[in-house]
Length: 228
Image (tube, rainbow, N blue to C red; front, side, top):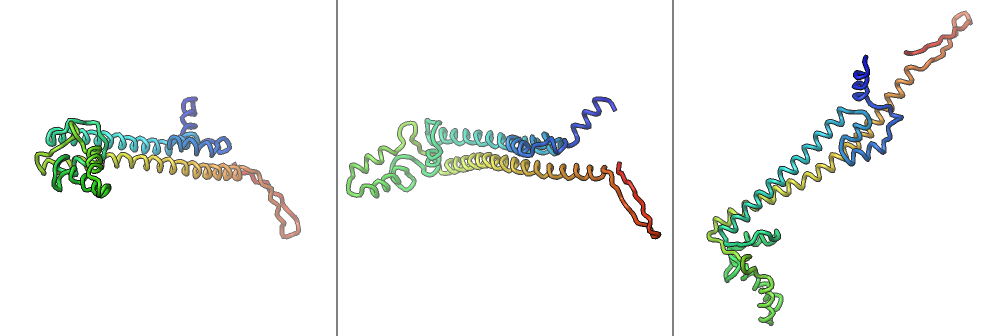
């Protein structure tokens, strides 16, 4: 066997358990799933965790991109069909755009009408305070909106919901990444215990044993057994 073959064989075999620090293996796996297995000499197990970790973050990237693309779509829908002239707003603002047909005016589909009901509850006997309260919260200028049709608003709501779901699925990747680290950390300890037992078993098989036997005529025999 040449030096290259010996090196390849060592890379695929577990390291001696005495040279492996189980705490270090856990720390490595918490930082990067599979790193603890690789440190312990279990290359095949490490590869499996590396692949799963890559798949998790590929899933995260895919859903993040999908979420942003759909967000751009619903913002463009609002600009074209509701007269908006703004893009950088909070999620609460975009939710309101889909909740009410228009920002100003009266009627159940008007955001201003909802604000005035809340203002009357806050300041029941102070009309001036009610007007000031509404003015401070009512979108105006390029932030005001007025949908041209209910169907276009429904299309906006659906696109926004799809965007929100995509972002939620992207966030779920963080939970999978944590789980992958925990499983890898536990796996390093299971492998370490298995390697220790394997080493102990190998030592017991190689040891020399002295056996004594008493024969029927009162004599005795001494046997030396050595396992190779």
